[in-house]
Image 1 (cartoon, rainbow, N blue to C red):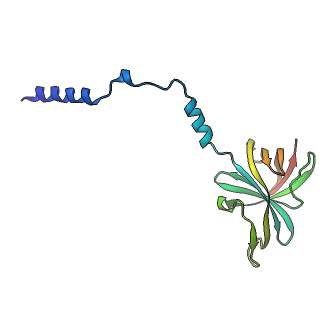
Image 2: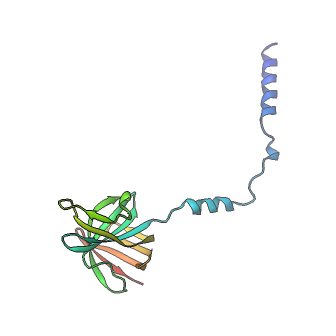
Length: 161
């Protein structure tokens, strides 16, 4: 057998092993793809913790960029439209901190009792370096909220609707 017959055998083997393209059917619609993407697309979470530290305050946290972006809200997040509250940006917290309740021991940063005040999901409508517009879907906090940076780590938090 020469080189030509080896090549013919190889071509015959390839045509036998290759599926007949006419028998392969494409999905009639991309509906399964859409459903799969909805299932895999996870809504980001938010968390509010009532924190009895040196001074009572509430920690408002947004799951974003692989961390919990965090603000300390001395008088608590507003629940009514038009009420404006100071929110002081603090260090990001790890996602594992989501849902934490318990006692931070004396001598530790933020020592005191922490309990979940509210939690849920949110939709990020606007994100700019000094502005967040979020639609909160929690048990207590529901609706359109703004976080506006006005000086250094000081932000204004308020409910629009």
